[in-house]
Every structure is written in structure tokens, then in C-alpha cells.
Length: 399
Image (cartoon, rainbow, N blue to C red):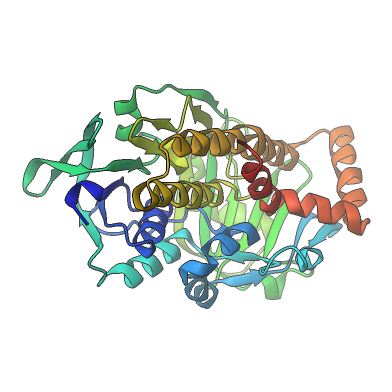
């Protein structure tokens, strides 16, 4: 294909590399620019929902994820002190998806799998240590100013996808606002090597837990447990991340004679934001560059991968079949609507449900959870939403 048909992609995270995978499978060449010197390996997203596994199925990477992850068919809200629980069984979705479970697997496993599969593909180019600093466009294509080991230069393509995260340079070049807010409390994540599942009765692979005056979450991955919590009242996140403080919080969850083996500890600020549009001419946004939400419920990375599939299907039709570029406006309408009305609303609800403290408020939430898990029809409807299967259906209906 002519160089002008090449699609440029800013960012080699799960969304950027998913775009690269989908486009190259259609025969469209891509150049990916990643600011880091290697694929990032962090403890961000760690849940792949059924809808996302369905979206990735024909891209031949699901087998790689299954080999590196844990299937979680049942997950729960749990009163940690009494052992009472509300268990959601995803087997009720068996007729709706090929993957009726949550797959607990770090996001970097996906980027590794895609990079491994595309490494020898002549249509794929990934430049590490190179960031997109600015983008301009014309009727015939885009020009991206990139800065890398050899200095600054210009890369040319037919379109550019901004998958370069919350501080996206592509979004800034589009002149779009990123409206929203930051949540008031910093969240902490700790990765621990310890067999919690063998020590705490009734623990599942995904647990949202209440204590008398606080909350935490516990997510099992193949090699570690991921524990999430908030600083104690009046405590900064820097204080909460001190080794002694982290050990103390883990000991509150489950006392042990020896200190826990902590392999990662980090803090992050949670935002809820969305770009005014996901498209401006030949520049388009996907994932965190387009929208941010609370990680509660694991919807962020998953919705970004859904963005990638929707966008690349439409770009493929435009580039290969001479379809009208108005398809990109439809992409923006579909995915922005889902981000605003589905992902942000549901993740915010999850955030607040998990953090509710008052006795009366908790009782109301608990009664609702028991009602949902006690009725197969209600649980199926709830899981269709939380697994993001319904959001894919809703997106397709938006013209």
C-alpha cells in the first residue's frame, strides 16, 4: 500500500496495540509510537470481561490471555468480618457469550501477546522511546511531529489514532476539552505473593469487601493477589504507602506471623473525564485519551478495547472499501455515548457502592445485592451490564 495509507498510532498500551492488531489483520499498515523504551509492565487493569474476550476472539490472542490468567466464574461482595456474601455467578451468561467468566490477567499480558504476534509482520512498525508531540492534518492525510532517540522528525499517514492516555498530545492537537473531575480520595494498589484463597474461608478470585469502618478489594491473578484500598482518614497516600503502613493494612485483612511479600505498591488519582468528541477530521481518539472513569468494576481498559474494535472496523471500511468518512462521526457518537452514559455511570455507581459507610446506607446496598443474587433473571440482567455485553449491543444501535 502507498505510504499515505499507513495509519499512525500514538501509544502502545492495550488500546493502541489492539488497534494495530485489528488494522494489520485487515491488511492496513501501521506505525506505532511509544514514549517508553519498552512495553510498560504495570499493575493497572487486570480484568478482561466477557464482551472484551468476544471482541478479541477472532484476533487470536485470547488463547494467550487464557494461558496467563485465571478464569473467575463467580465473584462477590463480602462482609469481611462476618463472612456474609452476595455472589454473582457468570454461568448465567452461557447462552450470551463464549466466555461466561471474568478473566483475571494483567493488561501487559495483552500487549506482550500482541507484540509477539505482530513482531514479524511487515505491516507493523513499533518505535520505542518515541512520542508524538504534535499533529496537523490536511485533506490528504496527517503529519505527526515525533521526538525519539534520533531527535525530531515528521511521520506521515492517512489517519492518526490517539491512544496516548490521559495526557494525550493527539487530543490536544485536536483542540478538544477533556471535561470532568478528579475523585477526592487517592486509591492504593498492592500486589502480594500469599495464598489468601487457601487461608480465608469463602474467598473467591474477585472480592469487594467491607469492614466495620472501611473497604478493600482483593483480586487474584496467576502469580499474585492484588489488594486495593484507600488511605485512612487524615492519612496521605505517601504515608499509607510506607512499608510499615502497608504491612499493617494487610495484617488487618489477614494476620500472619511473618511479613507479607510485597512485589508492588502504588497510588493513583481517579478521574472521570470525557473529550468533547472522539474525532476531528483524520484524527481520532480511543481509550484513556478519549475518556476516563473510576476503575471500580474494571470497565476502563475493556471499553478502550471496544473503542479500538469499533474504530478499526470503520477505518478498514473507509481505507479498503472507499466507505464515507462519516463513519468516523458514527464511531464518535457510538463510543462517546457508551463512555458517558454507560461506562462512567456504572463505574461511578460501583465506586460509591463499594465505599458506602453508614449503617443504613450499607443495609440498603446489601439488601439490593441480595435481591440481585437471589433472582436468576435479575442477576442475568445485572451481569449483562457489568460484563459489558449490553453496552456493545447498545453501541450498535446508535446511528
